[in-house]
Image (cartoon, rainbow, N blue to C red):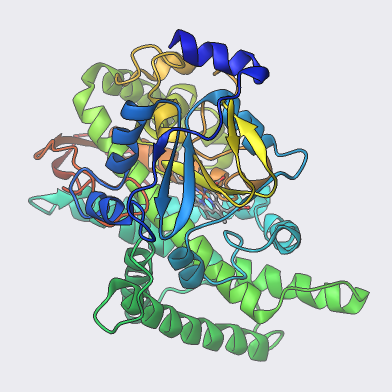
Length: 469
Ligand code: HEM
C-alpha cells in the first residue's frame, strides 16, 4: 500500500505499463472473461480476482485488445473530468452493434455532443413531474397484485414496471401485446450485449441482432405513424417522441441540424435499455438491503408514514414530495453504492497518458472500476454495511459514481431516483415483506449487476391503506 501511495504522488516514479496478464496470443484472457460472465458470481468476478492480484491498476487482453482497469478516485477524476479530451467512451463491439452506432452510448465525440443536447431537452421539470404521476399510478396498481400472489419475484415485477414506465414516457406505448413483444426483444438485445460477437444462428449475439432488427422495424412504424398523424389529433400524446419531433421541425425551420430517424430510433432503444434494467435492478437490491437492515427500514417507514399522513390519500406523489424525503434519498443512494449497478465505465485513451503512475498507450481501453471504489475501505468506512446515514455528510469527490459524472453523466438520473423513491414510498407505507431467498449471487450474462434469485418475497398489506383508490 505504501508503495502504491508513493506512486500516486510522484509522477517521476512511473514504472512502465500496468501489471497484468495478456493471456494467450490473439484471444488473451477472453475465455476467462467469458467463464466469469457465465458464472453465478457474475462478470465482475473477473475484475475482482485481478484487482486482488495486481492492485488498483491492471491490464488484460480481451477480444484481441488491451483493457486497463483502474479503481481509485484520483484516476476516476482524471478520466471523468476529461478536460483535455484525452479519453472517449467506448463499449465492446457487441454492445455497439446491438444499441446502434447513433446511440448516445456509442456515438463519436462530435455526434455525442449534438445528440445529448437534443435528448437533454426532454428531461424538463414538467416531463419529470408528469412521469412521477404516471409511475406512481403504475406502482400502486402493481403492488395491489403482489398482495394476492404467494411469492413475488421482485426483479421480474420491477422489470415490467420500469419497462412500461419507459415505453409510456418515451412513446406512449401501452398496448399489452406490443409491450410484451417489445420487452421480450429488448431482453434478447440485453442478453447479447456481453456475448462473443459471433454471427452464427444459435449464438446470443445473433439472437440479439435479430431482436434489434425487429425492434427497429417496430420503432420505424411508430415514428412514421406519429409523423403522419401529427396535428390530426386533438391532443398529440405528451411524450418524448412528440417533443423530439417538434424540436426537429423547429430545427429544420431554423436551418439547424436535426436528429435523423436512425438517431431517434437508436436512442429510444438506448433509453429503454439504460432505464429499464438498471432501475429495476436497483429497486430489487433496495428491497433486499432493507429486509436485511430492519433498523433502517423502521426509520425509513417512520419518515414515509409521516409524509403519507400529511398528504391526501387521494393524491399522487409529486416532485415536491419526493424532494422532501431526506432519509429515503439516502437509502436510495446507499443502495446504489452497495449494488454498483453499472460496475465499470468503459473509455478509450485517445493519447498516450499516465494513470496511477503507469504509462497507458493511446488506443488502450480503460475501465473505471466503480464497484471497487464504492467498496474501498479507504473511501467508505465499513463499506460492506448498509448505512444510509453515511451520506449525512458530503461524499469525497469522485467517490459516489452510481450515475457517473462529467460529460457522460447518466441522462436519466432524475427519472431513476424518482422511480426508486416512488416505489419506496408506496411499498414501505402499505406493505410488510419477507425475503425468502437471501442468496446474493449475480445473474449470468448480465451487463448490469442483477440478483440471480430475482429476490423472491412474501408480501402482506399493512392495515392502513395510504394509496389513492
Ligand atoms: C438506477 C438506475 C440507473 C443507473 C444506476 C444508471 C447509471 C448510469 C451510469 C453510471 C451512466 C454513465 C456511465 C459512464 O460514464 O460510462 C449512465 C449513462 C446513461 N444513462 Fe443511466 N442509469 C440509470 C437509469 C437511467 C434511466 C432511467 C435512463 C433513461 C433515460 C438512463 C439513461 C442513460 C443514458 C442515455 C446514458 C448515456 C449518457 C451519455 O453517454 O451521455 N439511465 N447511466
